[in-house]
Each structure stands twice: as C-alpha cells, then as structure tokens.
Image 1: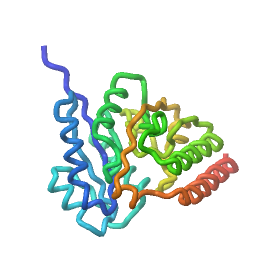
Image 2: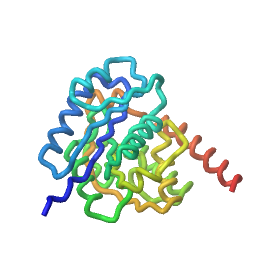
Image 3: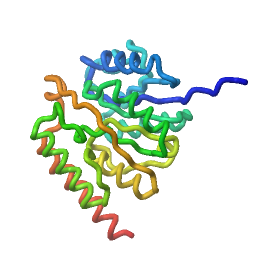
Image 4: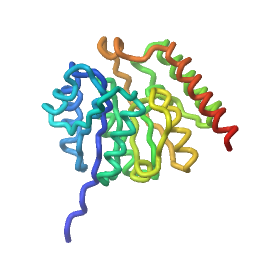
Length: 238
C-alpha cells in the first residue's frame, strides 16, 4: 500500500518593511516544521516595502509575492491566502513578520486544525496573558468586545494575526476591508458563511523591534469607525 500523501500547508507571512528580521522569522518557521508531517511552503507577501524585505525573504528560501503599492495588512493577507487556494493547499496559516509569533505556536495551530472539525482557528494571546502589557490587553479586549457587539462573535483575541485556515475557508472566505480592521471583518464573514471558528492559546512575544512597529490603542478608534460604517451600510442594503 502506498503511504498517504502529506497535507500541504502554506505558511503565509504578510510583510511591510521587515527586512531586518524576516530572515530569522522564516528560518524559525522552517525549523519548527522541518520534522513535522506536513509538506510546507513559506510565502512572504511583500506589501510594497521600501526596504529589502523581498530580497531577504528570497535569500531565506521563501516564495515571495510582491505588491507594487502598499495595500494594508488585509490586502496582503488576502493575496497570500488566494495563492494558497489557487495552488490547492489543504491548510494555510498567517503569522506576523516581526517575530511576534512563536513558530511552535504556528505548528501547534496546524496540528489542532488538522485533527478537529475547524475552519478558522485563532491564536489567542489573551487566554494566557503572560507577556502582554495591561495597555495591550485593554486594547485587544476592547476590540474583541466591539466585534461581539457588531457581529455577535465572541472571541478573546479578535485582532490576532496568527490564524489557521481549512481548505474550505481558503476557498470561500473573503472580506472587503484592507487595513487592520480586516481581522474583525474576517470573523464576521466566516460567521456569515457558516465556518466553524475556534481559538487556542499562544504566547505573546514582544521585542523592542516589534513594539516600535506595532499598532497603538489609538488606532483602535479608526478600526472601530470603519467596522461600524461597514456594518451600518450592509444593514441598510439587506
């Protein structure tokens, strides 16, 4: 009897001006998945970077898809997941390019989704808050509460960039926003089409580099305003 084929996993990394760290992020993922039971490809979506992100990613052995202009986190994520769908991957992940996510947590998420009846798996930093500042916890909880009020989706970490997608999610899940507000909108769209959503605990890794580049809580007001406009617009168009 022939051995069953390995599941194909796309490890998608949306990146904007991450040339200083992208090599290490790719190497970490490659090491974590090297002994796994998956056939993996690392895909970096260079979202119009002004530095050498694309060159560094290629040097580390990643597949690089380059945007001429910066489209935002939601746009870069959509490009990476579209590539995974078009190339018949069984599972895809997204994780941040600044090293905020532990490669072992990405692998753990793939293992959880591969074994369960799950379409969209969110890596939550708030199930175990170790490593997160009180300000970050407050901001993330606030946006998760807004996500619940607007869309009726109850998750602890609606803004997490570490997500794992089933084949069905890759094929059917779409969203309309291109900035960080896509994190909440994605959950809304997943609920609309009946995808199964779960969370699992991950570590929060904040370095001086990632904290300098990260989102601040004032951006949450911008995210909320866009989500509210989108929700109201669609309510009156139904």
